[in-house]
Image: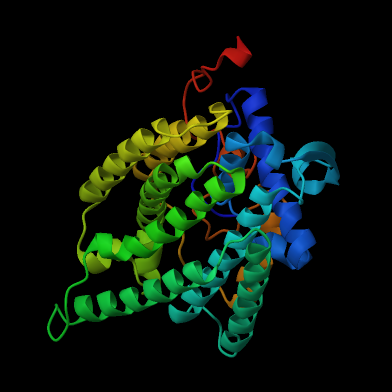
Amino acid sequence: MFGIIRPCGEHACPSLRDAWRAHLCGLCLTLRDGQGQGARLATNYDTLIISVLTEAQLPSASPHRIAGPCALRGFRSADVVDARARGARLAAAVSLVLAAGKIRDHVADGDAAAGTGPARRRLAAHWEAGGARLGAGVGFDTATLVSTVDRQLELERRAASSSGSDGAGGQQVALLDLTGPAEEAAAAAFAHTAVLAGRPGNAEALAEAGRFFGRIAHLLDAVEDQEDDAARGAFNPLTATGTTRQEARRLCDDAAHGLTLALGELELEERHLVDTLLGTEVRRAVERAFGHHSTTASYERPGWVRKSAAGLTTFLTCGLWRPRWSKKKGRPCEDRCYLRDGSCCDCCDCCDCSCCD
């Protein structure tokens, strides 16, 4: 599971945490039902926002059910968003396409072990096809997302070439040019939730919110991976454009402010979870990325077999086990667990909602 939005499991109110988990588990199960067990690895903390936005605009479009025990929930049953929900299916489609793009990006960065590149490309193509099928079922053309992924890779190649030659023989690529494809992808997905909910008046504000969210997600990913990318010789947008962490923080803060303003323009039947995830939790994600910067992890590159085994073990243990090269190795349980992330705060004022009074 990857993404920036992880509600505080230590202090967040139980009703909010359960609502978030219903969408997270619902997305995971929708991926399973729509693309097979392996597709659950594409579960994304951030794309579940699509399911949340759809339900917030039209709760009746998001039926729930009781799911059976799951290892990631401590073998407990739970209320989850049903795979029939249009928002969950859209979120699953976007998750598959973005995960496919991430695989292709790893191959482009040279992260694939010798001989595994073709297999990874086939998996990416398989997931893209599955995402297209799920998207078509809810009227969303995932070709928009695929084109943004392709454009992202092309921009990164141009930026890497320009930085490697000190700008000679090529046009410099600005940081916000590099975040542009992520912004467009998020804008398209967010705006389509207005179509699913029958709220066309929300489409413009949702697209604006998506652009800001896409920018923040891209920047935070760059900030958190910068040292790792440098050690591996991989592309990083901050390094390639010579952007300082201070400037990246300013851009994140500005985008978070714009995101809050865009959310205020939405007509929603249920606001609390949306405002918490895209408001409070986005700001906490920014604080985590810039405030908890660590230089203690070992970045020795393991082989692809060890990396694959470690990734699977981490997933099956809900993040509690981490390999020795992980940046979260040795951190407290609440920092490692996928569903219990208490690292976002140091006090008990996370929840200020009336439901917990």
